Image 1 (cartoon, helix red, strand yellow):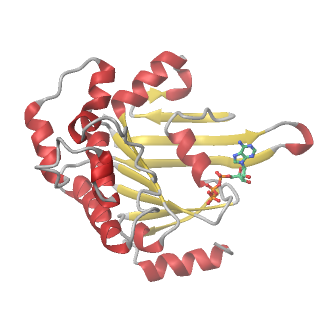
Image 2 (image 1 turned 30 degrees about the vertical axis):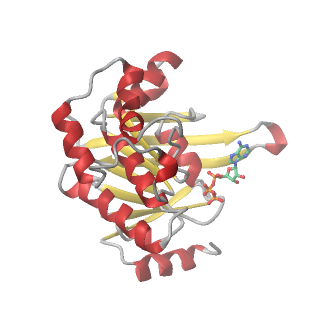
Length: 243
Ligand SMILES: Nc1ncnc2c1ncn2[C@@H]1O[C@H](COP(=O)(O)OP(=O)(O)OP(=O)(O)O)[C@@H](O)[C@H]1O
């Protein structure tokens, strides 16, 4: 098995053509090792969203390859890519993206239902208890706080036992206390469950929950910080320019 859960090899992404073309990523090469928590930071417009969209197969690179384990996402037809994304990648978004008409339990198990798979009851109990939602399974998202809704979204991201969890500003809509709980949870699924998490964030405090931070500037990798602290992350960001 590859040591990298996910790798980008010389990934280039150009939006538009001709004079108006924008190169959002310039030949980015990086491997995300299994069982690690990696944050991606960079100034506005540095290519963070593009990086995440290419890494998740949501967007296809103009050139280069994205490998999920041994699977080259670029080689997959649309239907197969959708299946791989559903079964092998967990997603966590800033706005939670829960379905309001479904209960917490139905939201968590939705990826399995879409895949026509049954929930493993032992695994389901474990993730529900880890995200602290015992007793709330029959509630609807509107009855939960923002932090609780994000924890439902994290349980949903874990339910199919994905190879990597991709989080896009997961604490962007939360106050500091619930944000801290969500970050502690993300770190614990890596340290205690062996998950692999890749998170894009603007927040040095959020980034410091990760094992390491990758910096992007003008669509290029501009360094890595291992064992980050909010102060060191903020200092690096200041050196990269306005943020
Ligand atoms: N669909 C698109 N069409 C044209 N240009 C785009 C498109 N999406 C992004 N870009 C450009 O690509 C570059 C990188 O954008 P991207 O959204 O990846 O940056 P970002 O680091 O996520 O920014 P932010 O922190 O502001 O969200 C920017 O110059 C942006 O204007």
